[in-house]
Image 1: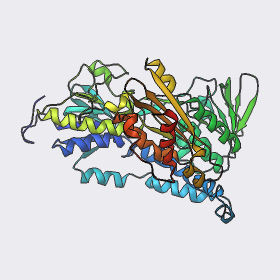
Image 2 (image 1 turned 30 degrees about the horizontal axis):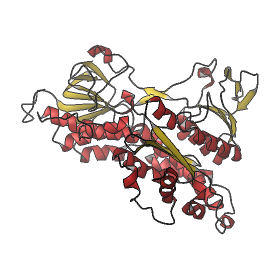
Image 3 (image 1 turned 120 degrees about the horizontal axis):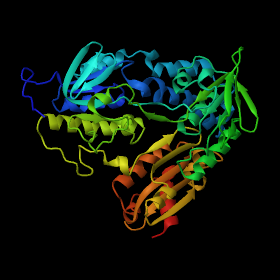
Length: 472
């Protein structure tokens, strides 16, 4: 690429154009700008993207109030202070405050303060280094696709015609349906099932397979019991044979065995796929599946990047932002003729995508995991040993809540004597996850972990118990 030395000599309109202004796109542009690149982002909806308005933030806001009530009810002295029901209107107002009432003025102001230009409209590639928005074509030394992902809707007769909710409709809901069918058994489906149950819906979950099937099996088992205790109906290994909405607005899912489940709304949360539709990939002779190197450069090109969900590596906001930081700096370095290293764990690469992707399911109990499950480690041919421990038996947990239940598990690579996976299930275990992530990324040996002393009495004492169970 040409290395511009001034705006007048710049061969393109921008050094980098980012299509998509969610957290991933913003970070690509920001990190490139901090290194001296001239950047613009293109956005056809709200600046800030899915996470800010329809996913991470509003969904967690819908969950938090009920979580606090349940936590208080597990503590004598606190439970007696709860004398009323949850204020649904207040929860919805708080949710809306986190989305800024679905206005992006604050995000636009941030772009301006960061020196990033905003182009409103739908961006499509029309050739190498070229992006069209409306009738105008912009050029850039590098183009970064940060178009995220879109929901996958199963091909069930009548489902599309029944006006189902997606996660957008659920997180932006202004009313709580008396009954809700949730189609899906993954993180988003189960979080929203918990949220709407706590807000007054009678919820039934229909899961194609086991709950949280990509996690350690005990995670789904704990979660299923908690959901049933909360009054949520669960049908696993189930897919509706058909779905229909009648003239009065009620929707009915008919199962294979003939059982009919009726509700006011049906929410479909059965996964997402990279959003590569209608962004002009054919104009640069690329298909819908984008393979990238660890700097997020699309293989076979020297100018096109795919960052975040759109590359399919790890469909999580925080992982996309991690990729974006690496990509933004790599883009600026290449534009300016500086060296870019593909060596693992450098500033220009997203090495952790391959070994340490942390994620939390914000249900009650929470499920927090990073790295490999025991089955995944076996499938990779690792010689491993797995150790688990009852979280409820840890002093800090019993202080945290009466009747605390949960479990922790680590997967150890016996060849290198390091942890390659960890899973925690229990109330408020999300904050345990970073320590496990650091242990995996830092390849901290078991012998050294013995010297990382957990404070007493905290839930973090689980680390000592796991090490004791593993042995010297």
